[in-house]
Length: 133
Length: 133
DNA sequence: ATATCTGTCATATATATTATATAACAGATA
DNA sequence: TATCTGTTATATAATATATATGACAGATAT
Image 1: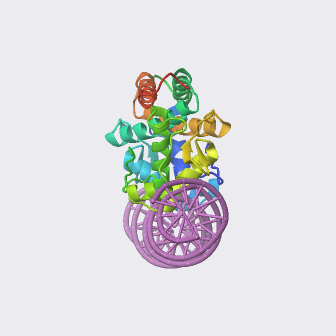
Image 2: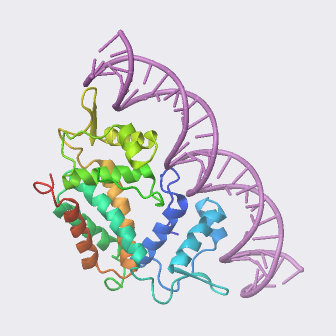
């Protein structure tokens, strides 16, 4: 697995895990239909508790990024990925506005900020097939 | 004051306050040298505790966005605002990467994502004098 | 000078979040 | 039958968040 957790980070473990799994899907390291490790297996590999992994899986399932099959276990959403919901729009707006404001106050130009955004989008989607899905 | 807190938000009150003060500086609503309300005054106006405001002020002071004068009280940094530190770079990188990845998975194109970033930067700096400081 | 306001510090309490531990269940699998 | 799966329940510990109360020295205004 490509997942690395930072136990010292202020970001909760279950949230780090969620982020890295979504980044895995974005990069193509995890493809639609791919199986994921069991909660017990992944927990042991990462050296954390079963329920922490289960919390991440459950939240990702509720949002539609994962599916749980009685047979296949936990897999990456094989059909349509969740779209741009109102909730995601709100989160994107809130977080981007804070980051943009602080960047501006710290003297980062609009060009530098936008280029950073652009590059990070491209980095996260490098290994994928086409463009934005 | 232009500050509005959401008591139902998952974002801590002291963090909401920090964000809105930085956004105030970015927009020009708060200019270098401007006085800020006392911790007790602002706390009462917002209907929250003194120490919650004090926590926000203290953190903003530690990062260099505010100054505390024995005479003038708490004022917006009148000299050079803090620049693009390694800590801010790291935070920007971490948060933007997560947002970009989720946006990509949800089918938001690079153009749409970058335009959103650009517009939010421009919105937060609309009322200011020049460009990025 | 007296009273008031300032940021600051200390202490205490309540609540929610995060993470772990242990146990158990039904369904699927080998 | 034994093992693995996601899931649920319960419990505990540590940490973060927010509030409450009291106090201090320095500055300010009446």
